[in-house]
Length: 255
Image (tube, rainbow, N blue to C red; front, top):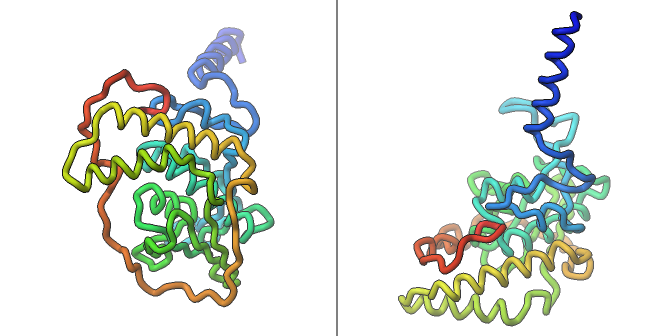
């Protein structure tokens, strides 16, 4: 290789490295501040999952797992929010219980979730369960938790947040805004800002607290997975306030 060619390769490598940015620390994810802030990417209990799928439409089970992160879910869902973070943390506890070797076979799972956009999206995209294949059942009776079943063994667990984990002031403000909306009244920009800030604070709490302190898990013996979704159709609550004016410039996290 000539000296000129060697120099060109070195310059190209430096250019690629500069475009790629600094290397990630172990256990961190690349932040994208307008929808995935650095505090979420580097939170100590924001743990990725190793998942197995098939290799193609007619493919065999993959030989190597891929890494699935909360950032992936936020990217396809459209935003990071406390509902998604809560679902991610709870599902992580359930899946680690069902797959103690640490590799989650997403071809071997069924899930019951409430019909909320953040919960159902996170359940489907984390586990591979789908409504159209009757492996994702939407039932509001499950509340803000999940029932997760490993099909091949029948091993079923129910997960939920422990009582008192969600801050009372945050829950009260959410309920007040929902009541206002149900009465046909528009929420104020100030209230949307406040609930957004409280949601971010709650998300931080969920990602910086050991999961066993915030999530309770129960084994369900002889559980019969439902054959239909009692709450198959519901309103998409995360777009109701899309046109409420902003009072301030968006902060990290896209709010």
